[in-house]
Length: 294
Image (cartoon, rainbow, N blue to C red; front, side, top):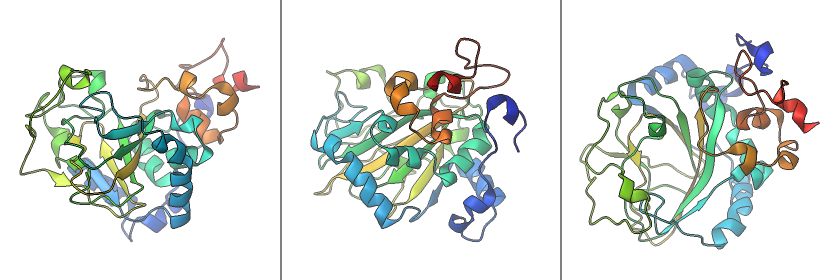
């Protein structure tokens, strides 16, 4: 059981036996030591072919709409699909996957929240994304403990040439607020553009994974989407988690309306905000937010 579980309404953290099949004979403590040292870990082939088929089917109408990114950060040759928990139960199942939650809960607490959950589909010709770290919006000086855990689920194979996420191992411990090629304000503007690849680095590592694999990264780890130099698109889904006392990136109360939220599994409801951070952060009209769903 978790300290404060009664107050939050969250019964317990993920049990080790729920994730044992993916640990490859290593202890969870050993994996966490690697996570703390490198800032990321990867697990190959976590999802089954059937699960991948369900995810692709759920995303198909949104990917086919071909709504492309608005700026250099989103990617002008990229489809981004937001508010996934409002678009299908399969995405709630992915956000609550026990392997991802084990690391999120261990780093951020059992009352962690889902900060964002989106699909990212890179088309051929997409250029490298600016370097960034996912909890930079909190604007706390580095070095510091991470205020997030990001999961990167490969729905397609991520390869050397199709835009695999690039990471800088150990960079979650760096004190630099900016590095060469990091995201700047113009990268979020429609008119902004970049020439070449100012962020090219010899120490970057590509997260090459077969479909169904999972990479987990600390919120302070420098990373970027790679360039897609292949002739096919590359699809990932990234649920991102934050501590229960911080604001979520996506406004989940609006992104996932109550009539949809009440149909979700309990753990998914807790993650989008139908939960309490002790002693009473998150209440609605003086009561636990779950009661607002009837």
